[in-house]
Length: 236
Image (cartoon, rainbow, N blue to C red; front, side, top):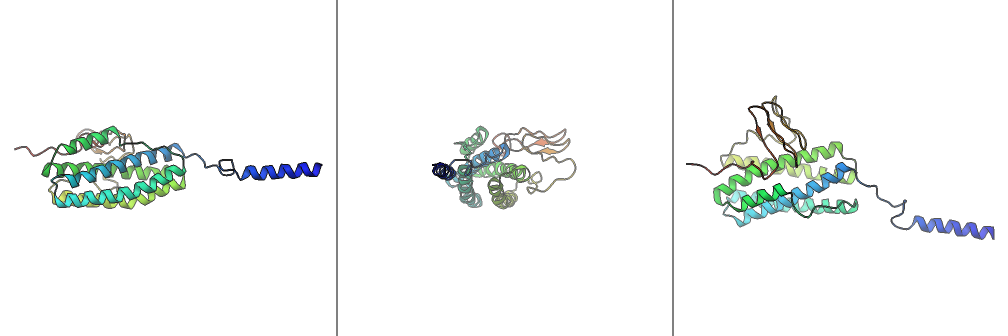
């Protein structure tokens, strides 16, 4: 009888270990950093896809249309991988871009032609710099290997987008003096803090998503996408 009871107990423990969702198969909860990265990157992807689609609907420069099409393709691919990772880690993703991102999209919808081209390029340069800061923060502070892999996969894509946007800005006659390549530290007086940070005195603050960075005296601020990043139409 004792042997039968012991056999039943062992069988029960084995069966419990095989049940999905038990401690043997539980997925560790992601850190706050990993969660916030996946959520913010997903919102950035959605905003970039919407912005890229706008270039096909507007009377935009062909080079702008080409970059816009590239944004749609690349960010769609990146976001598909991100969503798979979020599902695996049980991270709930936002259903829409941030309020500031939506505001920027609304302003882009209101302009056409050269004004659209300039606004599109200016906003995109700022957004890609902020996204690169988001990625670098995850790579240095994230803990989940799957979430960090999303950042690693996105980094070269975002960098190549930024390079293409700088070249496009130059072809349109826009200044890119305040938009160094992401990941490259500026010289003295140039602040590039993480999310919510602020620039050093005399420099240019480039906060991450959700931040409200401000440049010091004599500097300028590059705030959350959808605020004052874009140039105004030419005044004559």
